[in-house]
Amino acid sequence: MGINFFIDKLFSLTRRRKVLFLMLLDTVALSLAFFITLFLRFESFVVLELIRLWWPWLIVSLAIKLLIFSLLGIYGFVWRYASISELVALARTNILGSLALTLLYVLTNQVSFPLRIMVVDALFSFVLVGSTRVFIRLYRDHLLYKSGKHDRLQVLIVGAGEAGV
Image 1: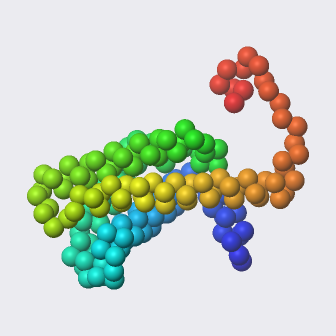
Image 2: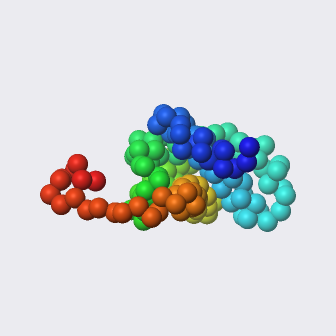
């Protein structure tokens, strides 16, 4: 039971479970982005002490970003066909989530929270969340290539409208 078994199970999940799995992956990626950002900003392991103070902010941040991701349809994409347009949409939702958090930050007067963290967190969030999607796409393509399904004859149906997709 290696990674192949896990990935095969992932591709065979129902749509709803795939969305839940992606949300779980995003939660891990966004949390990791937050911790990396704090570590880079303070350049030491004092971050471990700061996490105790800022964990409520992390929970709010995760809730807002996941809500925005969901509302803007990031979980509606078929990531096995992910391309640049999906990554651009992911970047937009990430920016919107960070702007919403910055607005919340300013409105609640969180003096102890540097605004630079929001920018760096947005960058790391995009990279980490995007990399999970790209990994899924690349691994799926690798499995197709390995299974020999890449040798199939490709056909273009002209004039079929949406049915030809």
